[in-house]
Image (tube, rainbow, N blue to C red; front, side):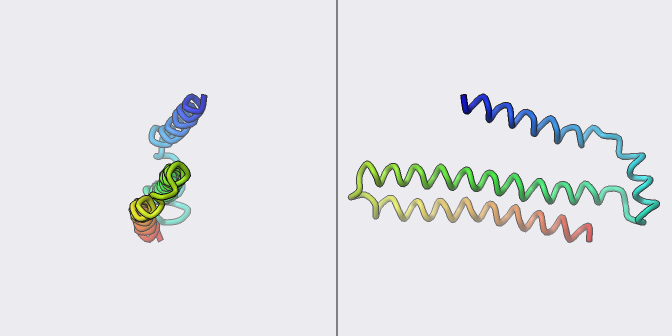
Length: 115
């Protein structure tokens, strides 16, 4: 049942984000350019920055949760192997977190491009 819910949520997110791609930006871009004097694409940069960090944080949190759960399950089944499980788990968590930090850097670069 959880796979169906996850698929439905993923489908709704993809459809709502694709609506942005197919929207007619010409009318809004002309009004925005006249009002603020900025180029029309900067709103999309802000949207991309927000989506990048949101998706990265969600994926990182899910990955870290699964890694920690698997490590704790392994330690619970075999407490003597806790030392052998802890090191690779911490390394995996650090690598997952580095991907989220890369997404943060990309989001900040996109944000600095518009400000």
